[in-house]
Each structure stands twice: as structure tokens, then as C-alpha cells.
Length: 178
Ligand code: IMP
Ligand code: MG
Image (cartoon, rainbow, N blue to C red; front, side):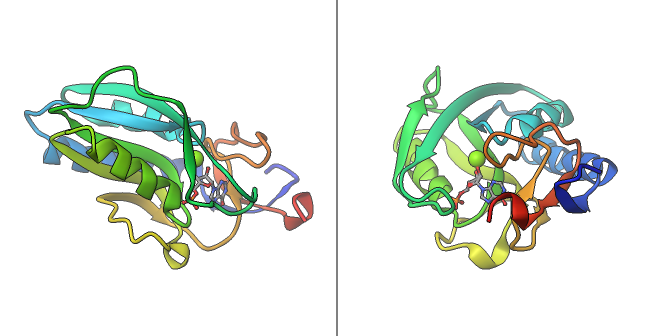
């Protein structure tokens, strides 16, 4: 285990089983239909890579990058699109793939933004869901794990761009950010 991690929340094996389960759900729900997986960079890139391979059927992927204004530790809900999708979502089934839903404010903005572009549907798949923190009341059709309200890193999630490469999800020692 990395020395900055106090405990492992979800192991590599647990994550693999979880992604397989979410992928199977999506495959079933969209059987016979095309689905566009939209990843929010950068945190969700690892989840997306595994999830896309766990979905059977016709899948396309695209990427968006956003930044929240305001204090670093907390999402302000004011979101700026840094990189937009390459193609139109009009008439398509879209699933937004996220790493973690904290306040939900980022996702609320994104979901509203994508819905305004006339897709057939917009759903959300998040790997982690911080249940108690949700301010935005987002309905997530696909949830990997419910996560305690601690700062977690690994499997794509970072603190100051570090730890994204850890193969597991762990709690970051608060001494790193306090
Ligand atoms: P929200 O708008 O508060 O839901 O912000 C969600 C975003 O904040 C996620 O996509 C992550 O990039 C980041 N984030 C929230 N909680 C954590 C955490 O525990 N570890 C790493 N990043 C986090
Ligand atoms: Mg993110």
C-alpha cells in the first residue's frame, strides 16, 4: 500500500467485480441500442476504460473536461466547459460516466447542459457516490459503490494530480492536504 494511504476502501478485485456488474446492467438496459459514453476528464478515465469493455453491444465514447470555479476543496456549482464533445448528442442515448458524486453540482450542470442538446436520453453512471453530501439531488441510474465522506484517491481519482495510478481506491491521509 502507498505510504500516503490510510486504508484501502475498494480493492482491485472488488472494483473489477463492480465494473463488471455495472457493465452488465448497461448492456441489458440498452440491448439492441447504440449508447454514447461521455466521460468527464480526468478522474473518470480509468473507470471509463474498464466500463466500456464491460458493456456488450454498440458503444461509442467521447470526452468532456470541465472546471469548477471557486474554492478548491468544494464544488461551487459554477462550471466551465474546457473541452466539449466532438460530436452532436442529438437523437442519441447518452450515459455520463463520472468518477465520484460529491455535492453533485458538477453533474447537475453537465446533465442539464447535455439535455438541452436534444438527446434521446441522458443517464449517469458514477463509480463512487457520497450519499450524505449530495446537494443537487441527482438521480444516478448506475452506481458502483456508496462511499464514506472521506477524501479518496486512486483508480483515476487524484489529489493535486497525484495518485491517479493507484490500482485500488483508498483514503488519503489528511496530513497530505491539511
Ligand atoms: P461535485 O460537484 O461536488 O459532485 O464534485 C465532484 C468532483 O470533485 C469529482 O468529479 C472529483 O473530481 C472531485 N472529488 C470529489 N470528492 C473527491 C474525493 O474524495 N477524491 C477525489 N476527488 C474528489
Ligand atoms: Mg471529476
